[in-house]
Image (tube, rainbow, N blue to C red):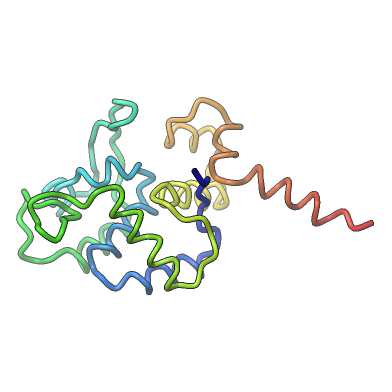
Length: 180
């Protein structure tokens, strides 16, 4: 199994957004990179969970921990712009083509990889890229590492730094800086 990476450049995030032509798929990407949720939690959401709301409360599938967080302006704008006006509160936020169920984790992976290919990105992309991208940019924006650990439900700073690719970035900079 490949270890997926965060999308480190905002220009590449914008390329991904442009490559996701389908409103549902673009919403999935924007929601994921702005929420730090795992794909398993994103895909179980219904329209009524988020439409017209400022916060989202859920119990994480993996950890069973309660999570209550603010839906930021990017998520709200994406919901307003990309969610069909006629979507009912009981509809899946990310419906399959049949509409009676949500897309699967595998389908989300395929959507993201196809978009990355169309965008010309040469990164290892997966569903976890969304969560890692959020964490990477939060860290780079100066969010305290202890707070970021809490957001991600990690138990150590080292785990968080490795998770978002900072450890590898630091290792790479050592090799780039030594030119004998």
